Length: 496
Image 1 (cartoon, rainbow, N blue to C red):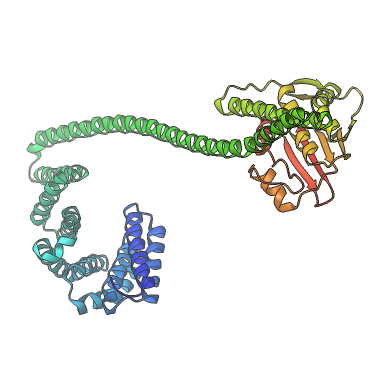
Image 2: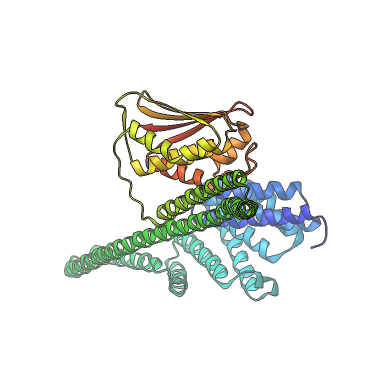
């Protein structure tokens, strides 16, 4: 396939559309089939590959004609035949000539031109015999050839029925029946039996007209017919039972398939969470341990030099790093409980005063080390329904981030107020603030990123992930209002 790659893509596109259209045509989805064939034809005409493109274009016209015929739009089908058939005849490719000949025979029959339809059908029949042995016919599978042959037999039956040639009609019915059994299409059998029964009734009626003495024969034939109807009814009943069982099995398979799909999604989510976990873990453990190692060496050196002032500073920093590592380990335990399904959501009435006091007391050392003032505001006797353990973790992580990002002698305010049908907890700091892009990275996607103004520690992404997971349990939300250089205000909302 030499030439321009766009031409090759056009060939692939048109072929794919034709294949999809044939699938929809087999499903009797005529609108979908029509759309695919028209898209293939349009793209092929606008993106010619070579002068031989007329051949697949002719085949697409045939597919459109067949679609319109199956949909009952015979005039439209004839229009497509008039366009595509001359192209197929010009290139004399037997396969396409056969298809247009067969379509023409069917159209002629619908137009009432029985003799012309018969001659055209014979032509198609002989072309199919050649197509079955001709090397070009290797492109078509035997099932497709058999399906075309069934269509020819069916049209022969209709033509002979119209002409009143019962013997010829029975002959082609027999051929149709044998081929149907070969293809495991047993629906043809009931049509054949119905035709024989109709012939028997006709013979019995003739016999009644000839002699009244043959009444007993007529009654016997009627009894046989009734017996046949009973057999057919019993057969139909069993078919309904079988279809019901098949439907139940299909429903079970659909449920199993849905379960497997959901299981696959869960596994994919689990793998994604695992990858995120290891990424965040490597990111968040690095800085605290580096600080711990470095300042431990400085502490040892200052003790050796008997520099007590420096020793106290280094010891405080080591304690601060140890607290950071401890907070990280707590977060790791909480994360593992969430993703292993071992955590339980237990909402209860919680005092806002006790919630704030406990959260602030655990962060007091870090705040005092940087001489940061912590201001707490809440309504007296305020309570909210939440999981106490999860809410403490949410406040702890956000407050810890605020302390790390707020410069020395800064200020952090923790406030509670009720707004409509929601509880709101606001944590405001005087840190470096965040731009909209950084807010989206940190709070929108849950990734760990470096935050301006936090030179010693990077943003602990695992803490933010846990905050969002715990908020999901409460059906709550988190909102960040901030500008660079103007501090940061984190607002948590929980439905009342």
